[in-house]
Length: 200
Image (cartoon, rainbow, N blue to C red; front, side):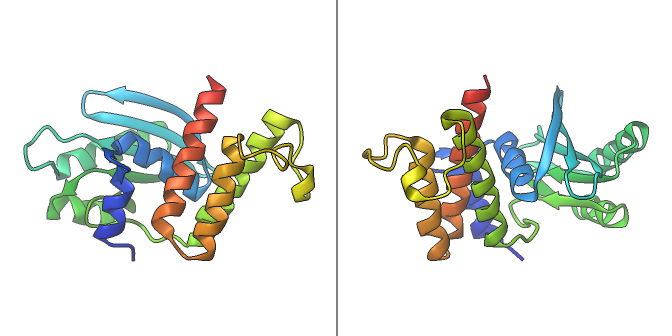
């Protein structure tokens, strides 16, 4: 299980704090969920995602608690269950700062996965690295017209790494070889930002 120190890095990228919306996007990327839509509400953001392997329809709900403690209560979980049944979701993930014991119990009983400061669902570094490679390949195809098969095929090969995708890819390889999970997550987050900026 990945504990609190990992989550803190997951939430704090560089000098600034990573928003819970960014957490959800990073989580979807690691799990290979395809985001089909997002909707802002009074208490947070709902992401509708599709699991590309199992074709499950997934609801990721980011809860921004209005209480000073940041606690998410059982009522929020029950509301999510109602919404999942109405919209026919197969699975649910709830992201929040902290959850009450009653909320945790309700989530366990109804197979809703929580993500909080205290708990992050486990994943392997290989999964992050593979997702990074997927995004790198996508960016290479979009920017250069093809995925390089050798180092010489890369248009940036003879340059001084002016290609941001190539620089992130090289960093990710180094971080993966050394087992630096935190830095791998940062590499993936940078690629997500780069992909989002080219999509706009």
